Image (cartoon, rainbow, N blue to C red):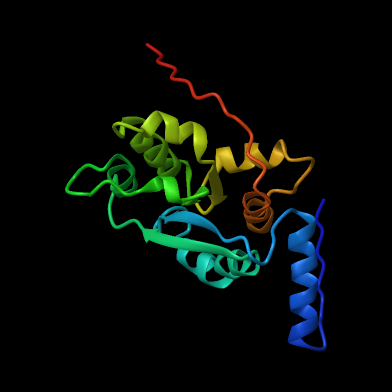
Length: 181
């Protein structure tokens, strides 16, 4: 099922008051500033991730009073290297972020999770502490679909995925490895 709501406000002030009320209802105050680390793969799927970030996601984060640091991946394993602190990358202080948002496909998500798992000395604890929010920008977007499926009938869409990330109600996920012969 699809839901579409369009609100037109006569003034910017009324729009701001409305967004402040929505933010307050999901536990976000004007004074609390959360920080998201955003990884974006500009070539995944149809190659629209940068456009989606610029036209939709960035505005949603700003309205929710979320400060974001954007890292646009430049090559394969770039996100892995940033998270693990390898390949001439200094160890990024990830503890300052409340969420790691991944805009792309399952491959970019794989890089982020595996980079964190290989990070020493704090990688495994960061995997337990910092929620990872998959945002569909790839071809399959399997994990993003699964997350939305578990979120009380949220329809699969970019807006729903970003909204779930902004709400900030993390859910644990078991990771596993399956080898077939």
